[in-house]
Image (cartoon, rainbow, N blue to C red; front, side, top):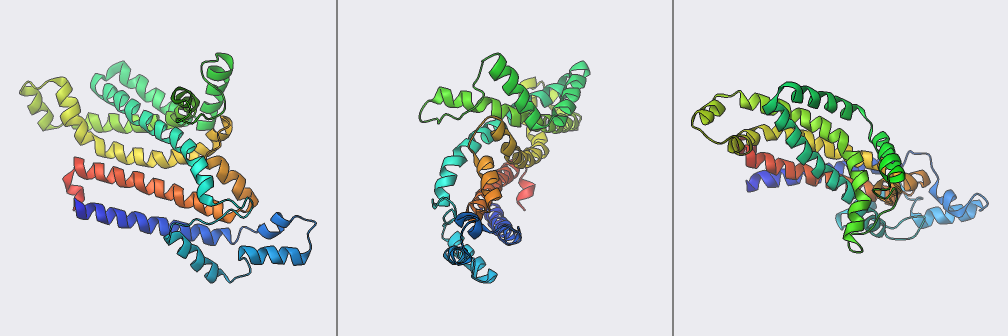
Length: 312
Protein backbone atom coordinates (compact mmCIF):
# COMPACT_ATOMS: atom_id res chain seq x y z
CA UNK A 1 0.00 0.00 0.00
CA UNK A 2 2.91 2.37 0.74
CA UNK A 3 4.35 1.94 -2.75
CA UNK A 4 0.90 2.58 -4.21
CA UNK A 5 0.61 5.84 -2.25
CA UNK A 6 4.11 6.98 -3.25
CA UNK A 7 3.36 6.40 -6.95
CA UNK A 8 0.11 8.35 -6.70
CA UNK A 9 1.83 11.17 -4.80
CA UNK A 10 4.59 11.48 -7.40
CA UNK A 11 1.99 11.52 -10.18
CA UNK A 12 0.10 14.30 -8.34
CA UNK A 13 3.28 16.41 -7.99
CA UNK A 14 4.06 15.97 -11.69
CA UNK A 15 0.50 17.02 -12.55
CA UNK A 16 0.82 20.19 -10.45
CA UNK A 17 4.17 21.06 -12.05
CA UNK A 18 2.97 20.47 -15.62
CA UNK A 19 -0.28 22.45 -15.27
CA UNK A 20 1.46 25.33 -13.46
CA UNK A 21 4.06 25.49 -16.25
CA UNK A 22 1.45 25.40 -19.00
CA UNK A 23 -0.52 28.17 -17.28
CA UNK A 24 2.62 30.28 -16.89
CA UNK A 25 3.40 30.00 -20.60
CA UNK A 26 -0.19 30.71 -21.68
CA UNK A 27 -0.34 33.84 -19.52
CA UNK A 28 2.57 35.28 -21.50
CA UNK A 29 0.41 35.36 -24.62
CA UNK A 30 -2.77 36.96 -23.25
CA UNK A 31 -1.98 40.29 -24.89
CA UNK A 32 -2.41 42.29 -21.65
CA UNK A 33 0.15 44.85 -20.48
CA UNK A 34 0.21 44.73 -16.66
CA UNK A 35 2.79 47.54 -16.40
CA UNK A 36 0.56 49.92 -18.39
CA UNK A 37 -2.51 48.84 -16.41
CA UNK A 38 -0.76 49.57 -13.11
CA UNK A 39 0.79 52.95 -13.97
CA UNK A 40 -2.32 54.12 -15.85
CA UNK A 41 -2.97 55.32 -19.35
CA UNK A 42 -1.64 58.82 -18.59
CA UNK A 43 1.82 57.56 -17.57
CA UNK A 44 4.85 58.09 -19.79
CA UNK A 45 6.70 55.36 -21.63
CA UNK A 46 9.59 55.71 -19.17
CA UNK A 47 7.28 55.14 -16.19
CA UNK A 48 5.78 52.09 -17.90
CA UNK A 49 9.26 50.71 -18.63
CA UNK A 50 10.32 51.30 -15.02
CA UNK A 51 7.27 49.41 -13.72
CA UNK A 52 7.90 46.59 -16.19
CA UNK A 53 11.47 46.34 -14.89
CA UNK A 54 10.20 46.27 -11.28
CA UNK A 55 7.90 43.38 -12.15
CA UNK A 56 10.64 41.55 -14.03
CA UNK A 57 8.76 41.73 -17.31
CA UNK A 58 11.86 42.95 -19.14
CA UNK A 59 13.59 39.63 -18.46
CA UNK A 60 13.60 36.86 -21.11
CA UNK A 61 10.83 34.29 -20.78
CA UNK A 62 13.16 31.41 -19.72
CA UNK A 63 14.59 33.56 -16.92
CA UNK A 64 11.10 34.46 -15.65
CA UNK A 65 10.03 30.82 -15.88
CA UNK A 66 13.08 29.66 -13.92
CA UNK A 67 12.38 32.30 -11.28
CA UNK A 68 8.73 31.19 -11.07
CA UNK A 69 9.69 27.54 -10.63
CA UNK A 70 12.34 28.41 -8.03
CA UNK A 71 9.84 30.34 -5.92
CA UNK A 72 7.15 27.65 -6.43
CA UNK A 73 9.44 24.87 -5.19
CA UNK A 74 10.13 26.93 -2.04
CA UNK A 75 6.39 27.42 -1.53
CA UNK A 76 6.55 31.12 -2.42
CA UNK A 77 3.63 32.10 -4.68
CA UNK A 78 4.86 35.68 -5.05
CA UNK A 79 3.20 39.08 -4.59
CA UNK A 80 0.21 40.58 -6.35
CA UNK A 81 1.29 43.10 -8.97
CA UNK A 82 -1.71 45.32 -8.28
CA UNK A 83 -2.25 45.19 -4.51
CA UNK A 84 1.30 44.47 -3.36
CA UNK A 85 -0.08 41.84 -0.98
CA UNK A 86 1.36 38.31 -0.84
CA UNK A 87 -0.60 35.88 -2.99
CA UNK A 88 -0.79 33.56 0.00
CA UNK A 89 -2.77 36.24 1.88
CA UNK A 90 -5.28 36.52 -0.96
CA UNK A 91 -5.67 32.76 -1.05
CA UNK A 92 -5.96 32.55 2.75
CA UNK A 93 -8.98 34.87 2.59
CA UNK A 94 -10.65 33.33 -0.46
CA UNK A 95 -9.88 29.63 -0.06
CA UNK A 96 -12.03 28.95 3.06
CA UNK A 97 -15.08 30.35 1.25
CA UNK A 98 -14.66 28.12 -1.80
CA UNK A 99 -13.64 25.07 0.21
CA UNK A 100 -16.67 25.45 2.46
CA UNK A 101 -19.20 25.31 -0.36
CA UNK A 102 -17.30 22.77 -2.49
CA UNK A 103 -16.59 20.30 0.33
CA UNK A 104 -20.17 20.54 1.62
CA UNK A 105 -21.41 20.09 -1.96
CA UNK A 106 -19.22 17.02 -2.35
CA UNK A 107 -20.41 15.51 0.94
CA UNK A 108 -24.04 16.15 0.00
CA UNK A 109 -23.41 14.57 -3.39
CA UNK A 110 -21.83 11.46 -1.89
CA UNK A 111 -24.48 10.89 0.78
CA UNK A 112 -27.61 11.76 -1.20
CA UNK A 113 -26.53 10.03 -4.41
CA UNK A 114 -25.65 6.84 -2.50
CA UNK A 115 -29.02 6.72 -0.74
CA UNK A 116 -30.94 7.49 -3.93
CA UNK A 117 -28.91 5.10 -6.08
CA UNK A 118 -29.19 2.20 -3.63
CA UNK A 119 -32.93 2.77 -3.13
CA UNK A 120 -33.55 2.85 -6.89
CA UNK A 121 -31.53 -0.34 -7.46
CA UNK A 122 -33.14 -2.27 -4.59
CA UNK A 123 -36.75 -1.12 -4.90
CA UNK A 124 -36.93 -0.79 -8.69
CA UNK A 125 -40.35 -0.13 -10.22
CA UNK A 126 -41.80 3.36 -10.03
CA UNK A 127 -39.13 4.56 -7.61
CA UNK A 128 -36.38 3.60 -10.05
CA UNK A 129 -38.15 5.41 -12.90
CA UNK A 130 -38.72 8.54 -10.81
CA UNK A 131 -35.06 8.59 -9.72
CA UNK A 132 -33.87 8.25 -13.31
CA UNK A 133 -36.12 11.07 -14.50
CA UNK A 134 -35.00 13.33 -11.65
CA UNK A 135 -31.37 12.43 -12.34
CA UNK A 136 -31.72 13.50 -15.97
CA UNK A 137 -33.40 16.76 -14.94
CA UNK A 138 -30.79 17.44 -12.26
CA UNK A 139 -27.93 16.78 -14.65
CA UNK A 140 -29.47 19.07 -17.28
CA UNK A 141 -29.90 22.01 -14.89
CA UNK A 142 -26.84 24.28 -14.85
CA UNK A 143 -25.60 25.22 -11.38
CA UNK A 144 -26.08 28.95 -11.97
CA UNK A 145 -29.79 28.42 -12.75
CA UNK A 146 -30.25 26.32 -9.60
CA UNK A 147 -28.43 29.03 -7.64
CA UNK A 148 -30.69 31.77 -9.01
CA UNK A 149 -33.85 29.77 -8.23
CA UNK A 150 -32.72 28.99 -4.68
CA UNK A 151 -31.71 32.60 -4.05
CA UNK A 152 -35.01 33.89 -5.43
CA UNK A 153 -37.37 31.54 -3.56
CA UNK A 154 -35.56 30.23 -0.47
CA UNK A 155 -33.72 33.44 0.40
CA UNK A 156 -35.63 36.39 -1.07
CA UNK A 157 -39.23 35.17 -1.08
CA UNK A 158 -39.37 32.83 1.94
CA UNK A 159 -36.53 34.38 3.99
CA UNK A 160 -35.32 30.98 5.16
CA UNK A 161 -31.61 31.55 4.48
CA UNK A 162 -29.42 34.55 3.60
CA UNK A 163 -29.16 35.42 -0.09
CA UNK A 164 -25.62 36.82 0.01
CA UNK A 165 -22.54 37.03 2.18
CA UNK A 166 -20.22 34.63 3.97
CA UNK A 167 -19.87 34.18 7.73
CA UNK A 168 -16.65 32.66 9.06
CA UNK A 169 -17.05 29.49 11.10
CA UNK A 170 -14.88 30.95 13.88
CA UNK A 171 -17.22 33.96 14.19
CA UNK A 172 -20.58 32.18 14.14
CA UNK A 173 -20.88 28.43 13.34
CA UNK A 174 -24.65 28.69 12.83
CA UNK A 175 -24.25 31.69 10.54
CA UNK A 176 -21.48 29.91 8.62
CA UNK A 177 -23.75 26.93 8.00
CA UNK A 178 -26.59 29.14 6.82
CA UNK A 179 -24.32 31.18 4.53
CA UNK A 180 -22.92 28.16 2.65
CA UNK A 181 -25.96 25.85 2.48
CA UNK A 182 -27.64 27.33 -0.60
CA UNK A 183 -24.38 27.67 -2.63
CA UNK A 184 -23.42 24.10 -1.71
CA UNK A 185 -26.83 22.73 -2.72
CA UNK A 186 -26.61 24.65 -6.00
CA UNK A 187 -23.31 22.94 -6.76
CA UNK A 188 -24.42 19.52 -5.56
CA UNK A 189 -27.55 19.07 -7.69
CA UNK A 190 -25.72 18.13 -10.89
CA UNK A 191 -23.19 15.96 -9.04
CA UNK A 192 -25.97 14.09 -7.22
CA UNK A 193 -27.70 13.36 -10.50
CA UNK A 194 -24.58 11.98 -12.18
CA UNK A 195 -23.33 9.97 -9.19
CA UNK A 196 -26.76 8.54 -8.32
CA UNK A 197 -27.03 7.11 -11.83
CA UNK A 198 -23.62 5.48 -11.43
CA UNK A 199 -24.45 4.07 -7.98
CA UNK A 200 -27.77 2.71 -9.23
CA UNK A 201 -26.19 1.00 -12.27
CA UNK A 202 -23.34 -0.51 -10.23
CA UNK A 203 -25.70 -1.76 -7.52
CA UNK A 204 -28.03 -3.37 -10.06
CA UNK A 205 -25.03 -5.19 -11.56
CA UNK A 206 -23.66 -6.31 -8.18
CA UNK A 207 -27.04 -7.49 -6.85
CA UNK A 208 -27.31 -9.92 -9.81
CA UNK A 209 -24.03 -11.70 -8.99
CA UNK A 210 -23.84 -15.20 -7.61
CA UNK A 211 -22.19 -14.32 -4.30
CA UNK A 212 -25.11 -12.02 -3.46
CA UNK A 213 -27.58 -14.85 -4.03
CA UNK A 214 -25.40 -17.08 -1.87
CA UNK A 215 -25.36 -14.53 0.96
CA UNK A 216 -29.14 -14.19 0.71
CA UNK A 217 -29.55 -17.97 0.86
CA UNK A 218 -27.48 -17.98 4.08
CA UNK A 219 -30.01 -15.61 5.64
CA UNK A 220 -27.78 -12.53 5.98
CA UNK A 221 -29.72 -9.39 6.81
CA UNK A 222 -30.64 -7.02 3.98
CA UNK A 223 -28.83 -4.09 5.61
CA UNK A 224 -25.61 -6.07 5.97
CA UNK A 225 -25.90 -7.44 2.44
CA UNK A 226 -26.35 -3.99 0.93
CA UNK A 227 -23.94 -1.84 2.92
CA UNK A 228 -21.21 -4.34 3.91
CA UNK A 229 -20.96 -6.41 0.73
CA UNK A 230 -22.84 -5.08 -2.31
CA UNK A 231 -22.10 -1.37 -1.83
CA UNK A 232 -18.40 -2.03 -1.25
CA UNK A 233 -18.12 -3.72 -4.64
CA UNK A 234 -20.32 -1.13 -6.35
CA UNK A 235 -18.46 1.85 -4.88
CA UNK A 236 -15.30 2.09 -7.08
CA UNK A 237 -17.07 3.31 -10.27
CA UNK A 238 -19.09 5.77 -8.20
CA UNK A 239 -15.91 7.08 -6.55
CA UNK A 240 -14.43 7.73 -9.99
CA UNK A 241 -17.49 9.75 -10.99
CA UNK A 242 -17.42 11.61 -7.66
CA UNK A 243 -13.76 12.56 -8.18
CA UNK A 244 -14.62 13.96 -11.60
CA UNK A 245 -17.57 15.80 -10.11
CA UNK A 246 -15.21 17.54 -7.67
CA UNK A 247 -13.50 19.20 -10.64
CA UNK A 248 -16.93 20.28 -11.87
CA UNK A 249 -17.78 21.68 -8.43
CA UNK A 250 -14.59 23.79 -8.45
CA UNK A 251 -15.51 25.14 -11.88
CA UNK A 252 -19.14 25.73 -10.92
CA UNK A 253 -18.06 27.64 -7.81
CA UNK A 254 -16.88 30.50 -10.05
CA UNK A 255 -20.47 31.32 -11.05
CA UNK A 256 -22.21 30.31 -7.83
CA UNK A 257 -19.95 32.60 -5.79
CA UNK A 258 -20.99 35.54 -7.96
CA UNK A 259 -24.70 34.72 -7.53
CA UNK A 260 -24.46 34.58 -3.73
CA UNK A 261 -21.96 37.45 -3.37
CA UNK A 262 -19.15 35.28 -1.98
CA UNK A 263 -15.51 36.36 -2.20
CA UNK A 264 -13.99 32.98 -2.95
CA UNK A 265 -11.39 31.61 -5.32
CA UNK A 266 -13.72 31.92 -8.31
CA UNK A 267 -14.39 35.61 -7.71
CA UNK A 268 -10.67 36.27 -7.17
CA UNK A 269 -9.79 34.39 -10.35
CA UNK A 270 -12.22 36.42 -12.46
CA UNK A 271 -11.07 39.80 -11.13
CA UNK A 272 -7.33 39.10 -11.26
CA UNK A 273 -7.47 37.43 -14.68
CA UNK A 274 -9.19 40.49 -16.16
CA UNK A 275 -6.44 42.71 -14.68
CA UNK A 276 -3.60 40.47 -15.85
CA UNK A 277 -2.35 39.92 -12.29
CA UNK A 278 -0.27 36.88 -13.20
CA UNK A 279 1.12 35.97 -9.73
CA UNK A 280 -2.40 35.72 -8.26
CA UNK A 281 -3.75 33.79 -11.25
CA UNK A 282 -0.84 31.35 -11.06
CA UNK A 283 -1.33 30.99 -7.32
CA UNK A 284 -5.00 30.18 -7.78
CA UNK A 285 -4.22 27.63 -10.49
CA UNK A 286 -1.54 25.94 -8.37
CA UNK A 287 -3.78 25.74 -5.28
CA UNK A 288 -6.74 24.49 -7.32
CA UNK A 289 -4.67 21.78 -8.99
CA UNK A 290 -3.25 20.75 -5.61
CA UNK A 291 -6.79 20.40 -4.24
CA UNK A 292 -7.88 18.32 -7.23
CA UNK A 293 -4.75 16.17 -6.93
CA UNK A 294 -5.42 15.62 -3.22
CA UNK A 295 -9.02 14.58 -3.85
CA UNK A 296 -7.91 12.21 -6.61
CA UNK A 297 -5.28 10.82 -4.25
CA UNK A 298 -7.92 10.20 -1.59
CA UNK A 299 -10.15 8.52 -4.16
CA UNK A 300 -7.23 6.33 -5.28
CA UNK A 301 -6.61 5.35 -1.67
CA UNK A 302 -10.29 4.48 -1.30
CA UNK A 303 -10.08 2.45 -4.51
CA UNK A 304 -7.03 0.62 -3.18
CA UNK A 305 -8.80 -0.14 0.09
CA UNK A 306 -11.96 -1.39 -1.62
CA UNK A 307 -10.18 -3.32 -4.36
CA UNK A 308 -6.60 -4.48 -3.56
CA UNK A 309 -6.05 -5.39 -7.24
CA UNK A 310 -5.66 -1.70 -8.22
CA UNK A 311 -2.62 -1.34 -5.91
CA UNK A 312 -0.50 -3.38 -8.33
